[in-house]
Length: 153
Image (cartoon, rainbow, N blue to C red; front, side):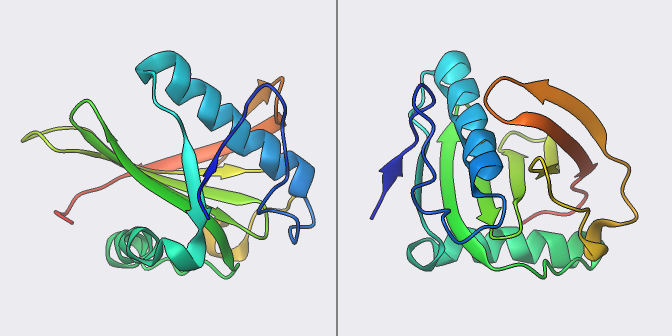
């Protein structure tokens, strides 16, 4: 069942099995606030089992671009288009959020972003990345990193 993420009242709906559920919910709400403010888009997530195509697309990009396989179980995902960018998010039980920004124009920006919820360790499969810290009223301290997508997906 789809869930429109509320960023005024942060809820752990769909994320309860995560050991950092509160921080992950704040991270998800932080993303929802960004897309509402910048694009007037309502950030709606589905259980990962109902968003298999989105999860598979994100996993394909991670695997083909960098040989990355995320060890944690995906809990929720969303895929949508804003302006001329295809966006995808997968939220994992470990507290990890992976997003893909895929510009649809020739030469458009294409990148994969990783965000770690407050309180989680850097997963082994991402240990080669350097993470920058960002403060968020909704999510506490967010650690983030990214890489540029080189191939077509």
